[in-house]
Amino acid sequence: MKSFFLEIITPEKVAFSGEAEMVIVPSVEGNLGILANHAPLFAKLIEGELKIVTGEKETFLSLGEGFIEVTPQKTTILVTKALKADEIDEEKLLQAKKAAEEALKQKPTGEALISAQALLRSTLVDLKVKRRKRRELEGR
Image (cartoon, rainbow, N blue to C red; front, side):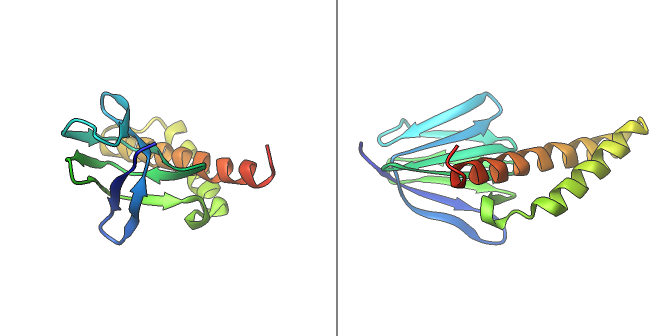
């Protein structure tokens, strides 16, 4: 399979920079799959799980909101966060998830509701990536 140059950039770091054969990202229109020679594209990304395929290897990242730009030269992803499983602290995530669930039980409104929903959504995506990696290591 042909490859293309992929960069994933957050405000804090370059989370990935190198060749990829495919990347799947969560967009407002659903998941987008990008292969080499993809048509030029600019799209808004939502929080979710990103998948990078290089040869036989699959890498998953927990992605924040942002944008993807696909050009003939490269694909660039600019997002608020991009975390690999080994960068995720599961214990802290479980505490944050519990706090978000408790906040939502109080039936908040306005900004408090939006904040609690965003925290819960973020922790669920992070947990999915973390647990996927653990299952891979366990051979499941």
